[in-house]
Length: 431
Ligand SMILES: NC(=O)c1ccc[n+]([C@@H]2O[C@H](COP(=O)([O-])OP(=O)(O)OC[C@H]3O[C@@H](n4cnc5c(N)ncnc54)[C@H](OP(=O)(O)O)[C@@H]3O)[C@@H](O)[C@H]2O)c1
Image (cartoon, rainbow, N blue to C red; front, side, top):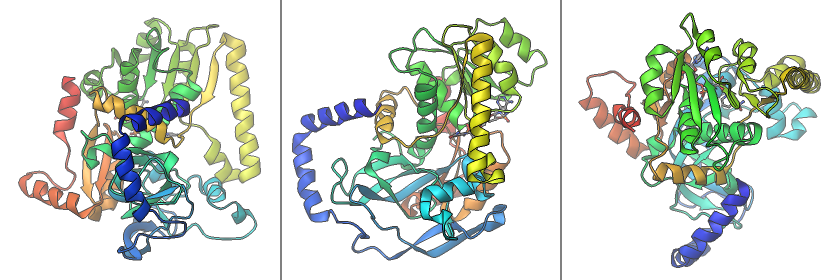
């Protein structure tokens, strides 16, 4: 992916040299060196922060959170227009991954007792670049961008977020910020899992049979569309009432996992080349038997015990324990059926989002926004996520201008606070 982006960037630069020159000129006046915050901006911003781990009560709104500074020459600062929530936000709110993420944020925290609080959650951002480090080459103030915020960085449930330019990508023009914020984290996760762990790519998927366990949530609804754009045959497990959604997104075959004969239905099918498991737990026990044997088939699960192990056993013991678990399962699967057993992980990757952008522009990937909330109602958005049964993504509109539109929507809507986006899902179903 990274090399493709490089080529793409070179191509787009050649094609748009006039624009690039203009941009360079603009950058000269607006680019900053390190440790700066944009002139004309307040030093404090609104954000939802945690001061401790716990349930929804620990979410605190403040207008006094420090605006993040550009600490390295390759960083860009983004004014957040919309963010979205992922299951990880719920888990992190409760302290999931705290030890590992604290180490990643500050390696010196092993030695001292520095605190990670106040912590800002939110892993997706769609917004506008307001400031750039001196070595940023691909972005300039004013660019509309989207990105996934790594869990070891301060999140997007705030007015501003700072990321390296490698993590950022130009937002597809045809999407609103609200729509765009629903995609980056699940896209980076799905691409990392399917490409790095699953061995799939755009040019090698047309003859592949892929099973997605858990197709109706954030990662699933994105993965279906990506794999169909790549020409794969896609089978999905989901609840019966999500069948219309996943078929609308392109799923070829759908199995209701709550049906009594779900296992038999899957076993009757031709075997699979790749399984993406978005569910974990018991799924792992039966899913690996559905793969083609001795043909390089891969089982990739997004539900690994790594961070849970480090939380409960400490960094060293937890990592070693998780390593042994992975090793044993990998050996067991390779010996019994020549099947590769792998863990998939989110990986921040702006160039990968550039590729997704093209698929969005081509109409091959649609945002699936199930519910959206104004910035004032972040706890309600967490509550929605906590109820489970996601059908796509839950988005938070952070910027005031988006909120104003939202208020108009609410006034015209007979429903309550969580506004669904029927248009998006409708268009997904029609495609
Ligand atoms: N390792 C990583 O870096 C990484 C990154 C992203 C996500 N993840 C993990 O991957 C998982 C999926 O993420 P997501 O964002 O897609 O979650 P999500 O949006 O919450 O979606 C989960 C979906 O699975 C469905 N489901 C629940 N039980 C199921 C079952 N037994 N069989 C089939 N479908 C089932 C749910 O709907 P119903 O309950 O109505 O069926 C829901 O639609 C989560 O556990 C998340 O934590 C890991």
